[in-house]
Amino acid sequence: MRHSTKPLLSIGLLLLAACSAQEIPRPATAVQPQPGHADLGTVRVHYNLLPTLAMNDAVAGSYGVRREANRALLVVALRELRDGDELPGSGEVTATAVDLSGKRQQVALRPVQTGEYTDLIGVLDAHPHDQLRVELQVIADKGQGNIRFERNF
Image (cartoon, rainbow, N blue to C red):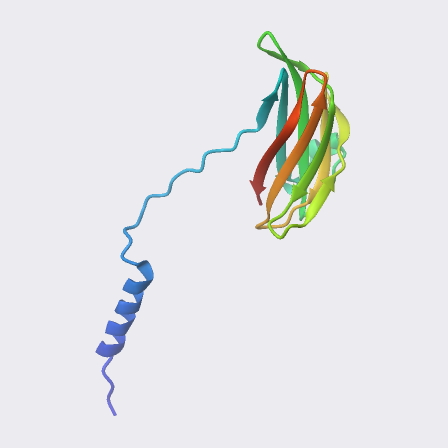
C-alpha cells in the first residue's frame, strides 16, 4: 500500500499556523534595569542581591563569603546625603526575602568594612529560576522606611 504524504504535510502546516495564533514576530525589547537605591529622607539606601557564584574569589574573600550554588548575597549600604555628596551613614536594617512559593527567609545582616564605609551583607537561599521579593526595613537618624525590590535568578 502506498500512502501520500500530502495530507500529513497539510495537517502539520495547519497545526503550526494554529500555534502562532497569526502573531507577527516582534523584535526583542530590552528590560530596563531596576533601580539599586532609594532615598529615605536624607539617607540613601543602596541595595543589591546577586548569586554568590557571580563574585570573583577576591570579592567573596573580602566579604568573608563562600561562593556556592543556590546562594545569594544581599548587600545594603546606608549613605547620608549632604550637599550632593554621599557620606558614611548608619542605622538598622532588617531584611526578609520571599520566593514565589511563599517561602520566607529572614536575612541575618552583618557589617563589613569597605574603605571608610560600613556596609551590611547577608547570605540567603536562591535557586535557579527563583524570583525573590526582598523587603528592607530601615531605621536611621536621618530617615526611615521600607524598600521593596525583586530579583530573578
